[in-house]
Length: 420
Image 1 (cartoon, rainbow, N blue to C red):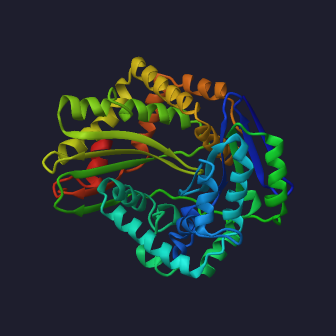
Image 2 (cartoon, one colour):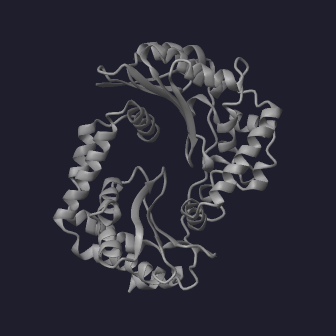
Image 3 (tube, helix red, strand yellow):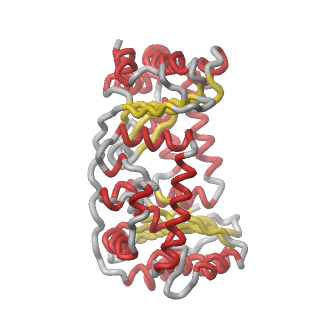
């Protein structure tokens, strides 16, 4: 398998990985335009735009877009995150040119028909309502907001309903003009793909775009805080985060190993202590999130109102204990989990396509898998202990609580316990 990267004169990048044994391919366009690239009055517009891209272009109606891909048995979708918006498809090898044509059409030629805009506005408002009714979904939005208050990085991706209700066709066109520019876009493809053929297609479409630079995202500033909503629910939802470093940090793989050992599976410390030994919860896990200039270690659990105090204290105690007694066996197990998950996932062209776009977006290159595995294998007990110590000392935890959480300790109390 070989990775090839080409950059057009206007800055548009094409990255591919040919997988000889496959009869299908995944391809898509990743745009460096997500929630953190919005002004406050635009909050939610990147996600709104993603929806509207499927609602018609100068050449295709919404039905034409769906039928074009589904007529050949393919799959077409999109997503919006804090740093990117992606439009992607999976098709058989002979239909790669068709998929490219559909994706480039919806990215470059959406008409934002006013009638369709009103229909989709209602759909997105329903999506926001569904999110508000899903405790283990909305709690992470609250956690992000209190971790990064009053800044684009802390705002929700869906945006508040009042903003979504006000967006106009001109607002969407403005966001596209400022952010959907060639040096902020990557065409990524994996599977049964021909790099040179895709470069030729890209030259004919994206290569015609004038050179421009997108808006620079406001730096993320972690501050920490607390959001507590008391409600009569069956479970108390608990989410806590601590600031870590971003993609470019040497801590990236150390943090991933640490988060996995702490709460990444049934054998992890949090699962064993909180669920297996004490019966405090059904679900508990920790995970690392890394972005261009910041990151976080997050712990989530659903428990009862009676147990939320004990669970909160246990999480802090396990963070502290991990500084002192993380074992070689735990590190080995976590490293193997990460490597296996990565390598198993990369048997899929969709996963490889996503990885290619992500790596080029972050580093401008695609690290060889042996290089990545080597960095994971280089994580030691000592480096994890050092990471855990710095994590506990760096800042106070952010906290989001939802449900019967009257008795739950405040972030200040948890910070004092962490520092004790």
